[in-house]
Length: 318
Image 1 (cartoon, rainbow, N blue to C red):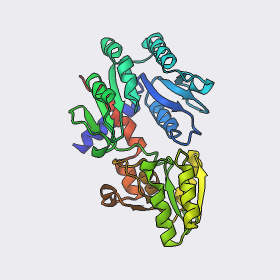
Image 2: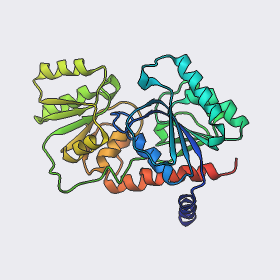
Image 3: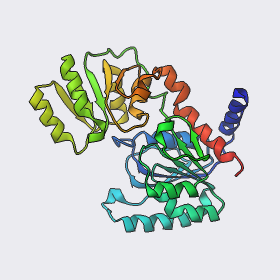
Image 4: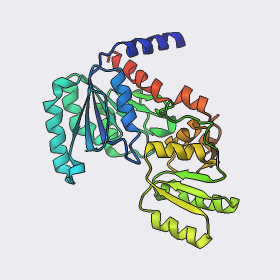
């Protein structure tokens, strides 16, 4: 069975015949939250004749020649949902002959906007969704799409035969150990500075262990966390939002990643850190039982195996 699956993957990789439309929030290699998706687009391009991307915001990128990017204009100061929707519908129609399948990354609202049109055009629709929240838009989108890709059983909370658990899509070639980088004695906490990430508990863990803590991320909880640091007299450095390169440097240098998030799904940062050989200290029971290591991430969550699996799914008859 495994040999048959890998034969399908090999065929899909050797034949560049797909022309997907990818809909995502940000195309910006330097974005601290979504910079990773730049590599996803590059990986799609390896297997496709052409890739069309519609994004909400466009920033710095260096993508292959067979990729075209169209922005809805947030980088130019546009903040109107009506304008975004109008531009999206216009692009979706104008570019309709440029793509034969649709991959929507996280935002189910775009499925609601384009789903009926795409289905009428006979274009297969896939949604990538990794979050514990179940919204009304997600429920409707599930009815419109052909397949939902998610990272783990906890990452998609609706039951459907359309759901495929395919791993997180970690770039295991980029996030990897480097023996030449010495490990420090400090802890690291990574993620948006918001209450659900519980950086406050990471601060207390580092304070109790009497070791420095570095926090990578930005968000509305910054002042509250800084106040806690002052109250405890803890040794904490706020790094702000980091590029993928700088984040990888932090994973490689930290003694351990302290993970206290309560998001309820397998957190991407845990896998990125593990891929870099960083020790993981997590209170999540589902994470604590995983054999986290660079080898585990490459086998079960690598981007390099995820994209071919998506194409195998696209090639299935409906």
